[in-house]
Amino acid sequence: MIRPMTISEKILAEHAGLREVEPGQLINARVDLILGNDITAPMAIEEFRRAGANKVFDPEKVVLIPDHFVPNKDIKSAQQCQFMRQFSREQNLTHYYEVGEMGIEHALLPERGLVLPGDLVIGADSHTCTYGALGAFSTGVGSTDFAAAMITGEAWFRVPETIKIIYQGKRRPWVDGKDLILYTIGKIGVDGALYKAIEFAGEAISNLSMDSRLTMANMAIEAGGKNGIITPDKVTKEYVQSRAKRPYKFQYSDGEAKYGQTLDIDVTRIEPQVAFPHLPSNVKPISAAGNVPIDQVVIGSCTNGRLEDLRTAGRILKGRKRAPYTRLIIIPATQEIYRQAMKEGLFEIFLDALAVISTPTCGPCLGGYMGILSKGERAVATTNRNFVGRMGHPESEVYLASPAVAAASAILGRIGGPEELGL
Image (cartoon, rainbow, N blue to C red):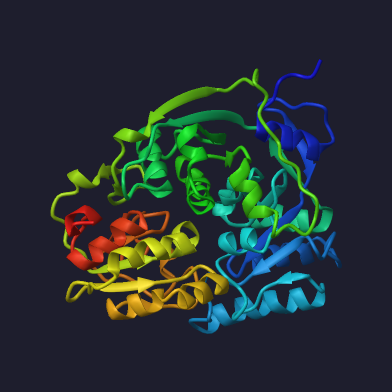
């Protein structure tokens, strides 16, 4: 008799060619997709060469996306991208996306239908866990494991124990997936799910849009998680059925599956959240934020640069202007999101609010460019990390929040929520 398994365990077992797996077990598994970017791929390519490899295992399953320092900000970043571009051409990769068609990797892959339910995906970027929102097992790896997978089509895993978090109740106004995940990280800590799968479940998750689900899975790593995952449902089906170009499989946890821990969260008690410096777990509700003047607001990133995020910001910014001496930077996550936001008139709203709009890039999230902070400056950002020096000077500060709080803060010139604006 096969032991009852969680959705994460089922996906790993199937890709390892095993009837069952259990937490702690070491396995080798075939991967459906391998992802690299302009920071991590060049190192992996060097390892690929060092191993004596000539060809990737499958040119359709290796995805390379320049998104961190593009359009190139300096000579070094130009060389990184050139190296990746040359390798993509040499290997005749199907999925290399150049500036003008690319997007932030973790927004682009779901949008293009490259990741599907039931997939096993690795990426040389810690936020690869984003794709768990589609019911895939996805996780970040180092450049060496990425290189090995390019050669063999496989990766090794230690099967993680699963934490199940059940979200019940109806969300308050202006509370979205970003607030739920910030609240959760604040509750369990940045190492609360260390090398564990986080299974997000419950009525409140079922009622989330795909954009909000992607945000939650994206930040599973900020709680130490190996992966974050949501059981596929009608929202998943609606999202993937028009995008999928190959078969996919919905997996579900067995009713008798064993969890290392189960947590219940009542979302009716959750108001918009803000993570104060210098940890994503240093979370306060907006009502306890106090008077914190800010210098910059960034709305974008692989966490919150999707269309729903821009629409939320637009609702708040419409007819209003950012506060004097407060910079407002808006970064659509993909070219398609950029185009649709423009079509819907959101750019007009953003420009009237005195915002600047960037081409898709990770940019300021990792302190790359397009919004570096000086000594003593504070930013509210819809990004995923607020470590010391993350967005610039080591004596700057980053406060993590949802697009709603970020947009309201830009208008107020201090941390604040939409309700302060009468919304």
